[in-house]
Length: 229
Image (cartoon, rainbow, N blue to C red):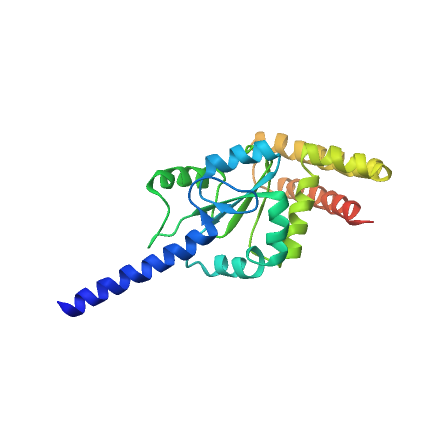
């Protein structure tokens, strides 16, 4: 009985410490620029007010890749400094044991995972400040500088990002628009063709491969235009 009581008290103490440590890094209610919050609604409201993009992290506490991402990217000074001026950060935790996610958030989190088609952890969804427009998705690869560079690159290819980029890089406008138009044309041709429910055969496989190749090659051209100084 005494041994059982000691174990119980130890577990309570351990969980209390764990919760305090997590709470120190994650806000349960409300939102602050550059700080992680579980409060999705407050974060969206803040993003609209401050006109800042939103990064949503889908994660689990004991996920190895999630821990790796925390260590190599999200807890580094480089990322923290960047986020403090540029990002609204939301954490959606799907831990099954010792979860500190409030009950009121759990069903909503599941709906968001379905909405953004989350297939594994960690996965980051990058949204414009309206909380609706998807900029892109990112995983745990690379370090903080490369992660931030991906965020910036993804931003360029949003409607607002394209306008801003062409306004600040007028000398690249012709080449940029040419590559972008070719991508859009190939994507439209591919989507229209798929709608016809083509049968699987060598001829159709070849056509599919050509369209995908066209999209990829022009995407690479576009990326190289952006990277050129």
